[in-house]
Length: 317
Image (tube, rainbow, N blue to C red; front, top):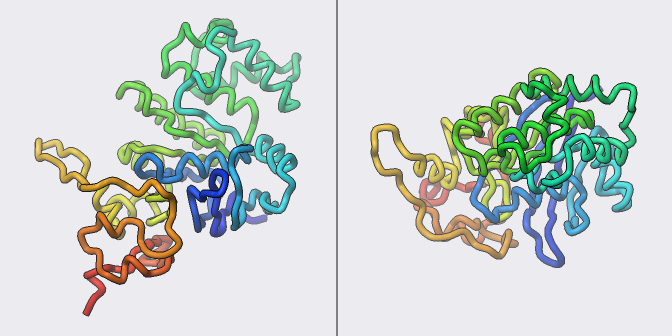
């Protein structure tokens, strides 16, 4: 049996007639954590919605293969059902997950029933086990609370516990720490890592935070204007970046010695992926004339390390 759980092959998805992410390809093995990083509007969250078969997302071309089943070949309703069975999602804010004025117990029971996984005899035992895995004590008290009564970090842990109860094999997280303070960010990050270590849950995490990606990820995918521009092991992408955009992201990280970081001039295009040419060439310090016309392609630069840059001026004789 293959250890690969999820494969995207030249996936192009978007809204209406406009692609928001194009030519996205990668594979994930069971138990791996992938972090997708990049500026707002680059297509990261759209990819998560496509994986969950959200009704507003249109699949233009390419394929999504989940445990050997090509989802893109299924009717939308069947695809959505299978995605919800196999994948769960934790949103950026608990408000997007829970009704703030209804108890967790009621919401847990409703969610489990909708997935066909509610069993009165085992409910308390399974909830206690899930809460223990995310380091939430006194589960009976927490389950009786309403979300508005708990902190953002506590709500995120409860959302992770619910994902565990659903026993889904892939967990998608859309900016799970961005709305939290630094201390709670670390706690949630540790819970995500512990979740993988204890339960073997494969994770795809969307984040702006390179430090979080470095802490969590086995692999990192860097996205820009709807395209994957660099992909590889976390240590390779962050410690030896090959794409000018990834290098710019690294250079923008504040230094502990007080040195001002180098900002990236300009703004990303808001029109989505272009048919030809590198979307980053207008902001790239090493862009050459050919960059505006070269077709998109990922080339291998190391073991499992891929980059879409053709080299620009550095590749010129």
